[in-house]
Length: 338
Length: 262
Image (tube, rainbow over all chains, first blue to last red; front, side):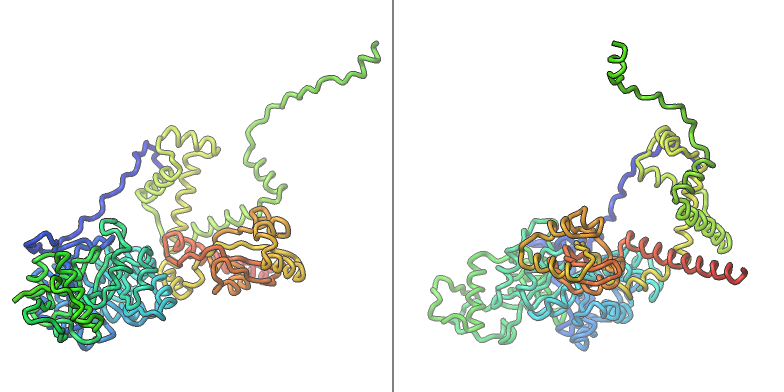
């Protein structure tokens, strides 16, 4: 063997992130942002299949700049499946635009032993070779133990060196992307219990935290958003859901006892409300058609709300939940818009 | 006067050490035999021979580039970046470049053989036995009698003595006595099965026991749990374990063959 002088090792630079097609932002509100500590660049609006959006309109949303898509392979699959064709087209093996898309999938079966089966369903149905974020879905107050077990799997699920990558490789064959990304790039959890979310907020096993947040249910602001430093490079990614809904129905449709001419927020306003909160990277929507896609993008292009507007929307949210007597609202807090 | 002088102790003078020639291979072998250290080394030597023969049979080969890269990696790991310091180091080890190169070659061929034989099985073995690859930091107090274990346990539960102090005072286990009870970080699979079973669901800080094994009665405390993860180190550990088990089976088959022929 040759014994020559060796040079000290140098670290190879990490691969640059692929950015999606840029979309013009008409204000200081960035349409694209980094999803917490992940390497993912995401649009601030995400599109889930809960509104049974068609594949055509899903592709339209992508063409308009939305790159974060959320897909369920089990719960509500009958709604989600209508967007499956588009996700297959964008994310299937060999798809030219795959790395411009951030594909988030969810399983609501909170059992680590089912992770492989859930991934198999998703890989098979969408023809994909990796998912960007795998969410454990619907984490309620009684799910502490199940969640701990699921998240303990993160190290074996995530990344190119994880055994799940090799298992998927054996089942679906080798692909360069699967080898490079791993079967799952990041792990997330969708919380219905904010106390549990708070407990896991700084765990290295959880990359993306999804929480319910809207003008009527604002607890996430105190329990989650304010617990994080928006500029910290190691904070988890934050996604909000149910921005437009409450137990009384869709927030913009709730009859609220306000004087005529008072501002009644639209769905895009409600997305903007979530996105105005610090640390919120993505507001997940259930947009149903391309007209709603256009309206949502147009809405967020107006940027964040002012403090006055936020205070008004908080009042509006309290009225939706009957937590406020309309007579108690000071007239100067009302905002009138045609 | 003369007798007085004779009674004064003469100052101690160290005898000059005789010059010793470097030990020959035959002398080293003789030393290993007479110090009862030869059996393990003989087994390791036979394993090396077996590996080389198996590689030949299975057509597992090594390219010059792989060999050189493994040698360079060894040197980088041992901070032997310069040629001169590497040669000095080899000299200190009393081995030639050829000896060292051969060692690198056998190590690399062993890795390749392990991968060839068990590489495909590691993931499924791990995923089926994932719980066994949880690591745990444990402390223990080992005593001979159950009555003594119960007495120590009572002292601990009543807070009359710390775990560390009790281990230092009562433990018969060499390591646990020396280290105030702390045994180290272990895979569950590495622990004595009775202990692994008893602590599998224990929480951090919980006292478990007494647990009776062939070594005595154990009082165990879980210090920390680590999440199972198939890192490269864990993968190497599993590969080596599967390989060693296989070799042991091979040895017993060979031994049976010898017995049959006698």
